[in-house]
Amino acid sequence: MSVKAKVEAVLFSSDEPLRVGEIAEIIGEEVSAVSKAVKELLKEYAEREGAIEIKRIGNKYVMQLKSEYLDYAYKLGKKELEDDVLKTLAVIAYYQPVKQSELRDMLGPKVYEHVDLLKKKNFIYTRRVGKTVEIRTTKYFAEYFGIDAKNPDEIKRYLMNRLGMGGDKDEETEGSSDR
Image 1 (cartoon, rainbow, N blue to C red):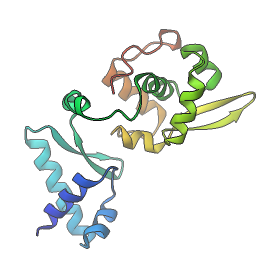
Image 2 (cartoon, rainbow, N blue to C red):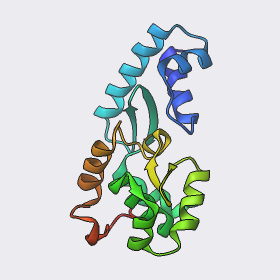
Image 3 (spheres, helix red, strand yellow):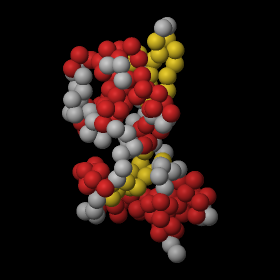
Image 4 (cartoon, helix red, strand yellow):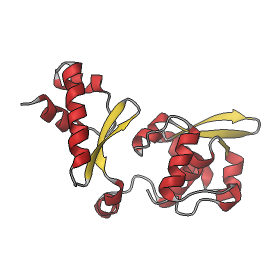
């Protein structure tokens, strides 16, 4: 069994991005051999015309569907988050850091439930600021959605490019529930 095939199996099976060292530990191979295999797989998947890609997110790797094929998967898969919760998450990601009171003004009182759910799922974190809380996305948010971004500005640029979001806070975020 080749190292590359083992790496591919691990990436296919994992539900979260993995570091090269983590993959090496799982398959019992040297980090250098796993690193070489990951590079080969990245190249192979980039060159083929399939629906699956291997993507680097920070220092981790994930196997996932290419974005243009997500609609087909959504027809079969169970949604983890409802559209209105996704919209709340998109607004948080775009405007972060955002105060919960501002979020409520933009989206209505349901945001309190959404914030609790998103916090429980580790997509966001909050910290108290005066009488309200400030909300930001977590590192897990970027990993989960396959966004190779380390700071809020990079996430904002990604959302602007990917979802056609833009403008100021008064425009809200049409199309933000596309994920």
